[in-house]
Length: 205
Image (cartoon, rainbow, N blue to C red; front, top):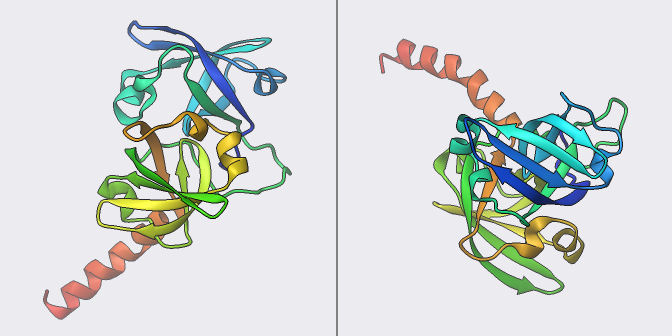
């Protein structure tokens, strides 16, 4: 489990295609106490560490992972948001993030609002159905608060500190991002399903 608080922005140092994508990332902080088998959120996608050395961590991304995320758009030098799995007893500053990407979104626009910025992201229905104003959403591994939700997009407000310490500083309109909806909404929907079916049956619907 993760919190959506980015620990470090790493850089893709190499990409090797094969049956699985071998993805190596240069980083400092997250490699201090990382070993093979550990979980790290890479732009919001939970990946298992394959190899870990001082200053470099390597992952092997399966074809299914590449189909369901924007990791396939990375190139050498791309900045990536990194967060190690949450430690027991650690401070919880974001929201519950599983690292299970629900859909790929697109940067549609950025406009200033005072010292902050309003970012608009296009998103699939699988994400928007769980998005609510003032609720939480994860964008490329960043825990953010939803400002508004439309039919095909949502907006968030970005502080200068957030932009400067994440990969947002390098994103442009048209770039793709990984999106994860708040898991609480998914559980609520699932818990209500049997009751709704039963009520419809009793009403003869």
